[in-house]
Image 1 (cartoon, helix red, strand yellow):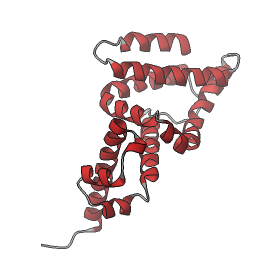
Image 2 (image 1 turned 180 degrees about the vertical axis):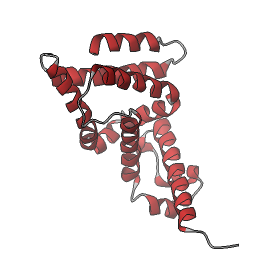
Image 3 (image 1 turned 45 degrees about the vertical axis):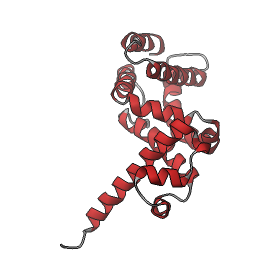
Image 4 (image 1 turned 30 degrees about the vertical axis):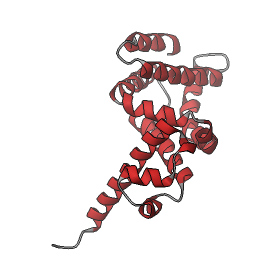
Length: 191
């Protein structure tokens, strides 16, 4: 048997890190961030506690990575360059993509919201969240300012809050929620 290559070690590391994050997210969602120990996370991930510390310094670093990675993933999957000017067409595509992502990954986002809305978690990540979401809000604000909307930043924040609320409502009852009708209303009212 030949020694592992650097690429194989990176794959192993990636799989272990993913397993740790998945186990932690499930446990944090079920038991609350403060109600879960590093030992419990390691056990659920199928690794030793010591090995977990090779990936994360502590439980706080782990939950920060989970929350921030979820936001980075959402921004990346929206597939929009927030450095460019937003057009009506690109805005509509972004909203449609947001709804597609919500439908495709409802179980992931259900766990994610259960974790991120915990007060202990919010206090750890709120500054970084605003840093990551800032370009999105700035781009929306520029769009609304160009359209002559009074208080464009508040309008942008309102859209974000409405989309968050829709996501939560949809997760409560995905089969009964009129997600496509809601999407059409969002496009009509906010674009």
